[in-house]
Length: 545
Image 1 (tube, rainbow, N blue to C red):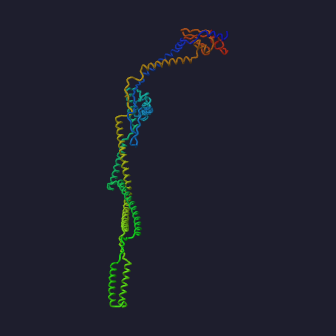
Image 2 (cartoon, rainbow, N blue to C red; image 1 turned 90 degrees about the horizontal axis):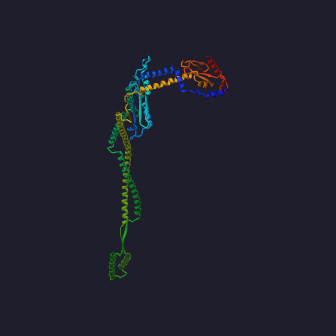
Image 3 (cartoon, one colour; image 1 turned 135 degrees about the vertical axis):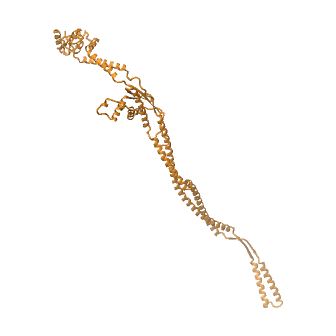
């Protein structure tokens, strides 16, 4: 029968791993199992009594938005940003603030955690106080558990300590230190003093500006330069308009005088009003009377003398001359003309004189108005300069007043904020005060149960480890799986403990409780055709014994 046939026939027999084999492993290493189990259990119980129990105290911080502090700025109306919901970033910031070195340092010092007695205090090289504080801070940070509660604005803080009163005390001090740090971070100190100093300084500047303004007004006679300037400019405009009107009238009057002079030169001073022609009756009467007298005298002379007489001829000549004179007087009648003053010329003369008088008056008024305009121009210029000075004073007064009122308002805000800080009206509050825990964080029964489970796990692991490291074969299945040779027989070992084991080299020994004596066929080859020589040695020694 070849190797394959024998292996197939041998596989018909079952040499599997049973519960009996498992218990056999425990019995083979029962000493290790018992010592390991009770050793670890005893150590756990000793540790439970020696190590002091830990007490956990819990407190909760509520982050809210009830108080909104104004932003410090130079503006009159402070920008205020209000958010109803507390963001995750803000909660994380508060967590980091709780775990900050300043808060933990103050907690360590106030609670005296750095004064606790440890084995290091008996070390020849004692630690410095700062080193003790740093070590206490590290321990406190390791014992603290700070976390945000999901979907809430709460921060939960827990602290473990061997003393329940100390756990509650440390959390109470931590809460106070955190609130103080929250105040210091979110609202720097010294705001009230700063605003009081600035308010006093601007009040002093405002008093100085008001005094300068009063002194300036007194120098101006109580008249505001700007008002006086406006009045002066109004008067200047009036007089300037009047000057322009006067100059226009002067030009008109001058043109009128020129026209009147031309008309006066072309207009006669008198006019003939009546022309009457008549004989000179008195002359004609005298001549006719003289002629009659001469004729009478001729007649009388002719009565006495001859016509040739010289006297008669003289009379004739006189009569002829008289008749000639009468003829001439009758041929040249007398002409009587009546003249009167020309009214047009009189009106022109009157208007010309009036225009010349008006022109002189206009010249005088223009000169006076020009002088007044210059005076008002100079006065307006002076008032403008004084108005600029007054504007500077008013601007300085207004600026100081606005700054004074602003910082006074800021001072009141800072005073109100200090009052809120003093009464602990903040955006964070202790929602749950730490209490002294009555029960330890880990129950002794739980500690014992953990010790039992640990002892079982370690002892079972030790037994299986030793079983794994042992090179002996104790079951037919081990021989079949490791050596890959057919098992001919399996002889149980008696209760006296004498039996045979086949080691990894195919040899047997007699120190295995519950083991089997195994006989293998040396002529059987493995699956690769190689002969298994170790099985022959095993069979030989088994037959000899």
